[in-house]
Structure formats: structure tokens, C-alpha cells
Length: 99
Image (cartoon, rainbow, N blue to C red; front, side, top):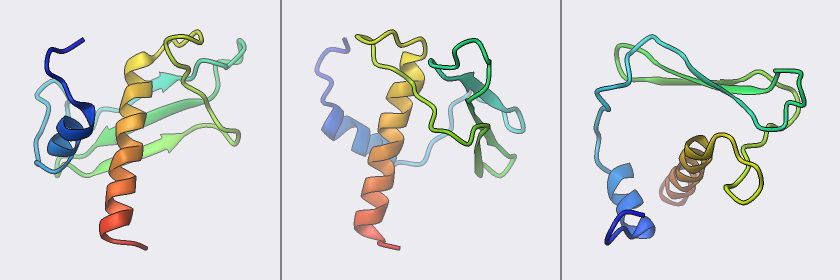
């Protein structure tokens, strides 16, 4: 655990400050298979950022895909955490600019 980490405060700070992560390359798709594919190897999420920094996201499934928690057999805990942060970003944008 990160010392003095306050997710409610720190995540909002990150979400509201534009930045780029140096290890993420533009025009490369980052894909992760979900935890409950049951050997079918279908149901993944992909994110790609173009050279302008615009994000594109796809899900290759008609059914919901699931990224489990650390207590429930999760194989992609960082992806699950990122999706939690995505949910907060969507909540904040909807609060500020309802559609």
C-alpha cells in the first residue's frame, strides 16, 4: 500500500491534471482478456491512444466481461483498478457536464 495515499483525493487530482505516461506508446493497442472466459479466450478490453492522445476503447464481446477482485480469483487486478478509476472519471464528468 502506498503511504499516505487517499484514493478519493489523489485519484481526483490525477483525473483533473493532463498528463502522459511515458511507457504507453501511441498507435499500439493494449489488450487484456477478462477473468471468466472459461477457455474460450474471448471477451477482452482494448485501449489505444493515437498520436494526438485521443483514446479508443473496444470490447470484443456481446456479453459483459468481468475483471474480478483480489479476493475472487482476479487475474488482472490493475485493469480492475483502472476500471474503477474510469468509473469515477465518468461519474465526475457526468456530474459536471450531464449529457
